[in-house]
Image 1 (cartoon, rainbow, N blue to C red):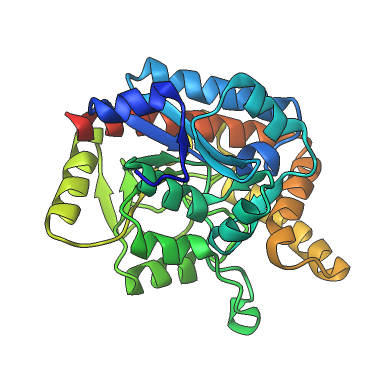
Image 2: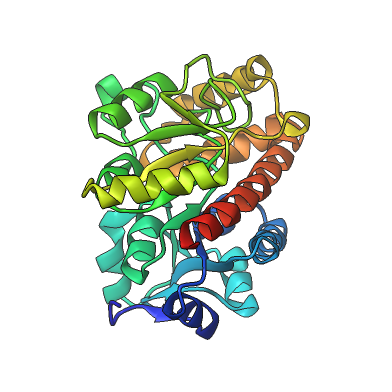
Length: 302
């Protein structure tokens, strides 16, 4: 165990005894949803994981300390404090050294989860290759981390506002297994469809756990993408959400918004343009992913 990490008693005891643990990111709390809906959702997601037989471990940095598992008060701080920094891999040493608060992205959550010995991580959507990356070179660190760190990441696919085709190509180049659950088509976050065939398909948590064991037993480093389509009753049709995304992207271009600020801007603008439907779908898919993540963790531990 890395000495810089601070684990809650619940998480430490679960890891020591071999019980299933599921990591959760904190950027979705600080930068993905409005307060207090973000904190309420975080608590509900943790409860879903407990109901599924696993221990939740929400990961963040508080006062420079990477924390694996958070209290109710710490969740509330993350959701309400506007000074919490969004922290990817490159930012970890800076925030730790300066003893700041940080909400971890997919990439940094993966790395801290792996340092703690957690093999399953649940999030909403993956980062990837941004539209126009052939000129901007804007590619998420999530993809590089997936090639390096031994954690299975359960998501509803790549965020719809990204270039999904190029993201799948990069994941193939990096040797990352991309598994869609119960579908031959790769999902696109708000929608069950993306127009791209999934590289791999598995239909049950036990099958996914077996793939995890097989990958790492073969000595193949890196994570797995587990793409869990949003439930049918909660999805926003691809054509409908696509039009809203195109409008939000155009507005971001007009305002010169780039880099780390682009995703929070687009997600927030899409909530406004959809009259809150995208936020409702986002919450539904995160909860759906938590159910699957708990089942995978239980199967993997067993």
